[in-house]
Image 1 (tube, helix red, strand yellow):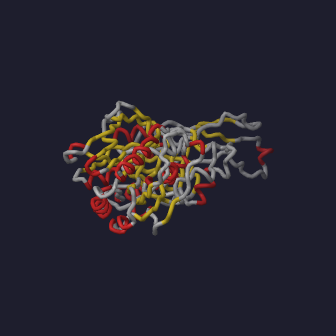
Image 2 (tube, rainbow, N blue to C red):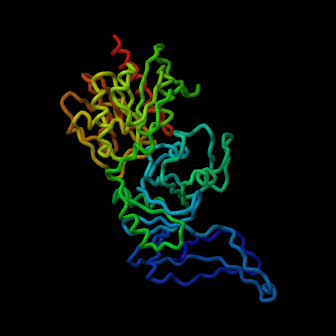
Image 3 (cartoon, rainbow, N blue to C red):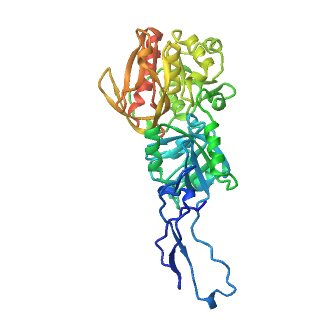
Length: 443
């Protein structure tokens, strides 16, 4: 397949000339954005190839000159039949996943280590990624769970006082694939119009486009239990707090509350913020029996964020049902969806989900609007919830349910991430609200 090559605006070597190669054969269907339509043709745009041509005398015995830039060596094949030529970084190989786009301007390391992205390729709409490198402080879990990273421009230099390695080195060590020099804007528009799509990333040139397309069409993520793949194996105590730069809330409680956190893919900063609000935290696996949790006599229970379809984990829904009403509970993201189902409500898969740090959310109780960090492909249907459940927050982009309370059952939940990481800190007050819920239950 003819690779897409962009001309460099550098001074050519002595004797060099620019030559246009002939257009790609119609059967390849090579179009703009480096996209190939499998099984159909498209209007081609002739790429510009730079070649060095010296005099015959100067060329005698000379080896073929190496190009000073990388050529396309990877492909993203989507289930709709489109193929996107790109350049690889990180690991090599072939990987299948659901393609979603994230609108965050910063925080790619936190996104890479968010367990909620298990089974997905994350496309960053911010065009320039990698310039701050990778550091030791911004990890949101012990490893990377996502399938791959898709970016427009990969920074060729790293400049940050905390950086210890480049993004390319980081992904290669963790066996995570990445591609760049691909039209992320065009792919994002396709995802917004058609919805999330299954895709295949591959650097294997022996595989035909049609073979990769078949892999994309056969792979499924709906109905798959992804929580069990990201949850911890055994209970543990969490002690770490956020740094002084996070302590902008001067109304934190002086009391200590014991919180048991169900790890459905919990982000570290959720636990840090709870600890900073005066909570002693015990983290338990997703399959931990509710009876064992209640035997610990906690002041509250957190149902954390996590990846995938809440309908695929009925054991988690049952656990929530057995705990709700007995102690105060707080659900975040996946935890919010599980609470919705445990109360008898329904969840549904969104067209392309919410992924990013710029989603406006309104608190219906006060009219306050927060800019929130979100990462989910499923939502709770508020019309399916029983009487007494109040929808406290809505996403102002699409009016979807973003928060619940049920005073009778001592529960609260948010569809988005109050801990940020990355994202704005507007919603941090939700942790204080959970503390107040636990405090009132003590009286």
